[in-house]
Length: 300
Image 1 (cartoon, helix red, strand yellow):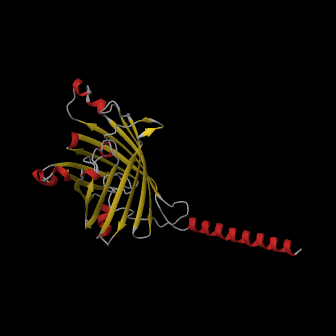
Image 2 (tube, helix red, strand yellow):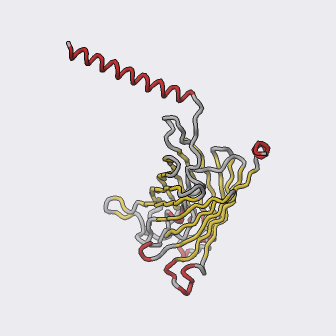
Image 3 (cartoon, one colour):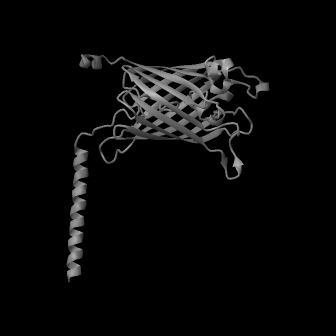
């Protein structure tokens, strides 16, 4: 009898706790959500996209710069004599959708992309992370000829799709994963597959109010079973750097084994090796301009 009584009491209390938890969850849904802000300080972790988007009616003017390799020696002043640049414009169509275009001097490539915010991290139990859908296209405008394996630039066209999933832990730490598919209409080498499957991991550690340490790594699938699907000359991309916020600017300093600054380059065509000193250092500068008149009036 005592055992039955104890079991009944246990079931009663468990049911009571479950009801209390359910009521708390329902109450939380009724209240206005508190959305997480500044998971990252820029729309880029370093090379790769972050879950951040540009606010509605705001324009981000970006300049990305990469010097030569550190192992190029004194003759090239350890890379300072060589540089590549990307200039881009990114615009917030809505608070969820942004679009962008850019042009890189490296491989004379034009890029076009869109990012859409599917989910935003909040204090509600069903929104533990931020999720962004990213899609981009890349046009290599370098000269082509049959001797170069390419008859036209359409054969060099590339596309990428990503899901960016991130969570901010407290005030200092943010982590992101980025499952990626990259497709090339035709590859530079015959032993490289047209489609590349990759997974990116990135993070941010806040050092002070205006500075943070960032890191990211993109792993690409090298083989399926015993069959290699990637040319061995291509490596995984590892990048380390610092973000410095100065008012309306975000200044990013970093080192990477990728010379390229856009997805088809640093995910699909990284050839540098950290162990051999194939390290390219550079910076990103971001300046945001507002075209939202109502926001300006409210600010005043």
